Picture: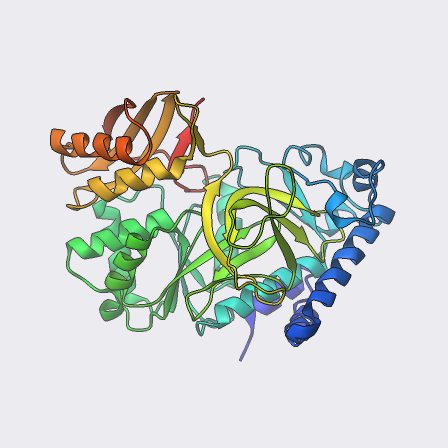
Length: 436
């Protein structure tokens, strides 16, 4: 079989065949030896950057670099300086993989990966999608993503879609008329899987529910749906499983790193321990026990072009108590550290709590398609929503009562009905936003 996807990586200078073999070797390391493998790779990448990266040398100049726990925790703000100042010796911006983070954390920056590291990232992604019978060289993807609207950016993305066996559904307009067009494509094209932003795919599932349709009946070739980039709530997962008739898989990744965690066939959120080392730290950069929430801090074990060593990705999560070095399990992803609501009582609460409580009430009858919550003052919030009918006074009262119960009383809410919600230029929907 002609492997167009692998060939496109190879032609771009990414040694995919060698990286797949390297990845297989990592996978074959026994559980008993895996801690040693991790500690060895950790030390190797630190030593490499101490020797070859002036940015990292300066950052660690007054630190005992032999002690892992003394190494600095990198933040996105640390990395907001010209890429040329952060590249390792011997690496040229024109000869490495260069990209920009999405900016969903509010701190976008340009990053680099050397080509073998980026090829290893692809080997990792290919392996995990393979758990569900997906082969990037032959499986046809229904892609729910945004797309650049400028001519050159648009054409480049369309070419990548062609080489990657993808058909893109643009998600900037998700009206019923547009979703009807999506449905026609599923009737005529033999898609193997869906991949894309959670909120857009949930909207498509709600559209199917309203029409009393199951996607697998319409498109029998469908095997799985992989959602990414936004929070997946349990009731949305159940809705999608019902309306799509295939497994729903939760992916957690970052463009500057790799896939961080990917739901396995047992329903566990398995952390990528092959190319990454994931730690959970408290506010003082100390490790917390498994089962305890903290900041997700990640080391890229193979990126020589640019240091991502103890990199605070900006998320809060919990590792499962049963995690091992070879198979860490992400028990829960709580949300981004910058999505915290500050309340009049002094209490801090994950902003997604507001979203979640509100969601449990206003989506019950199927009237509200989607919504976002914004904190405008210490005691004031706005809920922008898209619906067929205005929210009733009874629904608004229920929301206020639930917020009082779960968080605290006397918070003020304004509800704004909209025809559509503002998404990022990549098509993501930010479910909670603090304006403070």
